[in-house]
Structures are given as C-alpha cells and as structure tokens.
Amino acid sequence: MIDKFQSDVDLGFMSNDTLNAAKQLLGLEIITCIDGRITSGFITEVEAYLGVGDKAAHTFEGRKNKKNEMMYKPYGHIYVYSMHGHNCMNFLTTHSEPEGVLIRGIEPNMGIDIMKERRGRDNNLTDGPGKLTKSLGITRNEHNGMELNNATLIVRHGKTPAQILATPRIGIDNKEEAVDYPYRFIVEGNPHVSRFKGRAADGNGWE
DNA sequence: GACAAGATTAGCT
DNA sequence: GCTAATCTTGTCG
Image 1 (cartoon, rainbow, N blue to C red):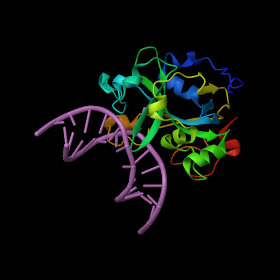
Image 2: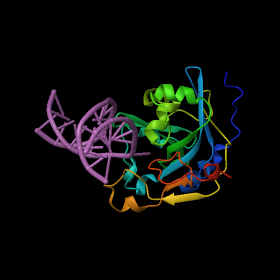
Image 3: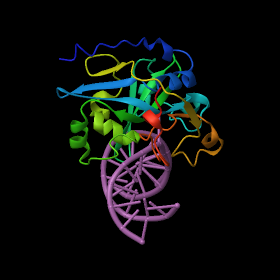
Image 4: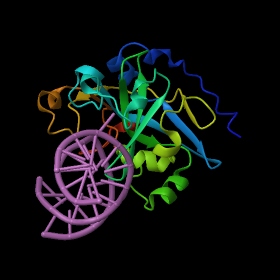
C-alpha cells in the first residue's frame, strides 16, 4: 500500500555532524502509514541535542537508562520519548554518539483530515513536538527505536527552505548555559513552528 | 510505594 | 503571559 512512497533520501547525511544534519532535515517530507492511513508533512522546525556535552540532552554525560536507551542507536533510527502526557520524536544522528534531532514542527501535506481527527481540533495541528507526533500517529510504545524508511515511516525530498534561522532552544529554561546554544533551526517565515509570531512569509518560507 | 521532574499543551486572564 | 492538566520514569525511603 505504501510502495509508491519509496524514499529517495540517502540517510548518510545524518551520520556525522548533528548540527549539520538538523539543518538538512528542514524541508524533508515525513510520511507515516499507520493503521493503513497515510499522513505527511514538511519539516519546518528542529532542535539538535548533542549528547554527552549538552546539558539539555537526555544523554548528558553519557546518562543511559531504560527511557533513553534508544538514543544510543546509530543514525537512521528514531527515538520517541514521552513527557507531560505527550510523545516527542527525534531522528538519531552519528554512528555511535547518543545525539539526535528533535522534530518540533512540520507543515501538513497529506492526510490533513486524519490529523484533525487524531488531534480533535482543526487548527495548530503540527506546530509543536507533541502535536505533530499525535497528528502523524507516532506513539512511544509502537515506534520508539524503529528504523526510518521501512513500511511505516518514510522520509523523502520535499521542499527547500529559502532561509534557515538559528535560535536558542525552547523549553529548557533550567539547563544553565545550555539554554543559550543556538541549536534550534526553523524555516524563516513558516507559520508551522512553535510560538510563531508575526506574519507568514510568501510561500511559507520555501524557495 | 510516594514523590518530583520533564526537550509540553490548552485554556484562561 | 501564566497555570493547570497529564503520564512515564528516576530516585529515595
């Protein structure tokens, strides 16, 4: 059923530098096929988490436990964690470091009606990490540690950001110096990002 | 077994 | 902008 959604992305770009991988993820289309229903969106907002040396990361100083053990998988897998009753999804990077990129926002493309149904509302479907996982049907129990580009979760080339903006990360106010690291990347002018203010750019910030 | 914390969200002022 | 709601896991007793 999902054969026509073959990936055309070489995941190798995530194998080395996490910050670089985060920027290259912007604009890719994430497609999920769950319960036979297809939803997708273009990535508009990400945050990099640099593992051992990053106070804001779950794996700071090499911490490892049942909750974050999937962070130690190599690139090409995903790490789903739950908190405050929501799920958040990371794309893992590097061969052996516990680093990854949190997907914080996407622009809905396919299956918008399904997203509305899953979210139980018509607006703000995917402009936050907990929101987009719910819209796409991602759950920690079923998808934590899974590989990309299998029958359920596929990435392929989507759009190209006209301009990428780097900002400090969000929601880590108690992480001391780590709160200032400019590891959040967004498509400038795209409204499908968390805490969006102002007016959307022409073409939502895509080229 | 109790309690606090967390990469959040929704709803109200 | 602020606060309550929500839930899984870690930590301590």
